[in-house]
Length: 128
Image 1 (cartoon, rainbow, N blue to C red):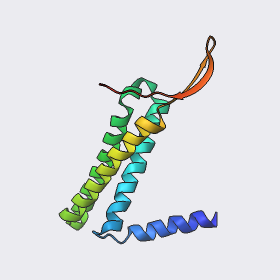
Image 2 (image 1 turned 180 degrees about the horizontal axis):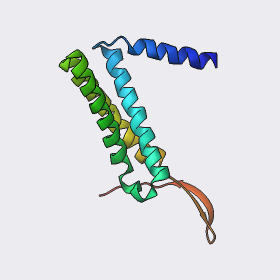
Image 3 (image 1 turned 180 degrees about the vertical axis):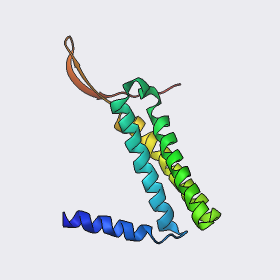
């Protein structure tokens, strides 16, 4: 519990100091990756009718959240360059997170069939 409190307080303190360096942009990239991956997994689990578009939905929602956040920060701080860098890093991370989650994490198939039994596999599709 103390470790969680320490990590949370450290992250909150770090987020107060904005910079236009590699670490700042990498944090936006990783945040976009995690957010888009999470949204993609949620869409897959709770909205099975949208499974075909789950990756795109995860990317779009994560990118929209970043756009709103960076627009608010631009209005407050008037730093267009910094906000555009943050947005670009987040969108790039969102694309990677949604793609990896959609294609590689959610693609394994677990099937329980009465006639064929149980099997676990990976469904791979390739257009030639």
